[in-house]
Image 1 (cartoon, rainbow, N blue to C red):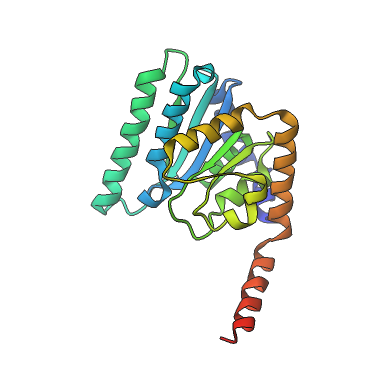
Image 2: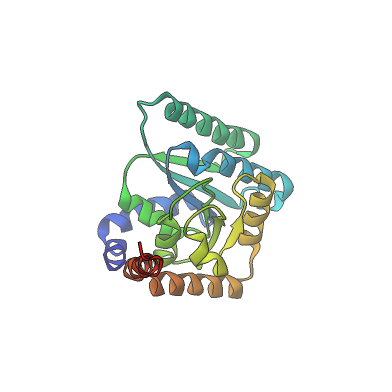
Length: 226
């Protein structure tokens, strides 16, 4: 995590942070950072945002959704088709709700870690709604560098859930309505609760770092006499 913190203070990250702040325009920001693959459940995330705006119009023109996506296996038809599907889902939201002054969803495609870190610094809500994920480092990196007491909306099917559940809003990744409700809860959460949750997330991540995780795995193997 020390390397992440050092990168977060770099000039590259600062430049990208300035660009993202220009996009935010002092609005609240939902962020997701994922590889472009079906297991990451990106389309349902956009559908949940659409549901949020339909159910709670008070968020119209007051929140933006930034998706920082990394290409993955684009030579495989299934993955290319998924990119087309998620772009269509985002386009639908922008067409339904967008105005000349407000672009609800912005998608940035490319492998750019400093830009991803800048986005993590600025989120009010971090959406991690993967259908299946062994760990999900984004869910852990976000709380370490975030500067806005951001709320983590976390899939129950991520490996990080077991560790971060006490301070996250845990969702079923296939339940679009429940995800929309969690996004609303996160966006309207009182400042004090946001701060408490953010501080607890940082503590949980720092207490159980990669070294602690490895020791735990070794202890389990030893206990099982494998």
